[in-house]
Length: 115
Length: 113
Image (cartoon, rainbow over all chains, first blue to last red; front, top):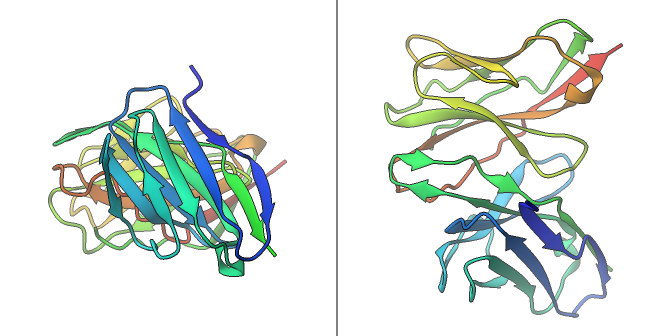
């Protein structure tokens, strides 16, 4: 059982380049999330999805787009990378159903540097 | 979600109990207290959660005060591998928060030999 897998683990981009981060989960979770973590700070929510074909903005969505075409995958896109997007990106998934919830399972992170 | 306050850092000797406090004085009646930890920039890992009763699992114990304004995470026998950033998070479980976790600065726990 792989849990949550992020691809790639490391990437260096030039300013203005685009890229897509892939998150895959094998737990059949409806809910998926993208967070970013900057040095010395906690995680901040970028976008999330409550099911296949649905996405919503989180706390810091500007400069990012997401798609959830398949239940098990959640893609985070950077159309025109900026140095301010240098960060560690974490994907997570969870089961949510009203008053019941599993804990969130996190991937190992993608370290992105924009130069 | 209610705001939490944690000390920025704590130390603990290996083999001793680590008691990590969290203040959540504005917590609402339907908000749960969650604890996660993050070891050396890995993805956060769930530890435990509770509403108002004390909880225990294989990793830790969670003690919530009767007025629910604060809680303590207890690692009963800390090891070097417990060195991590510990996050105390409060959230509702009524289907409105969509599982969103609001991370603060957390407490850096350092376990010494």
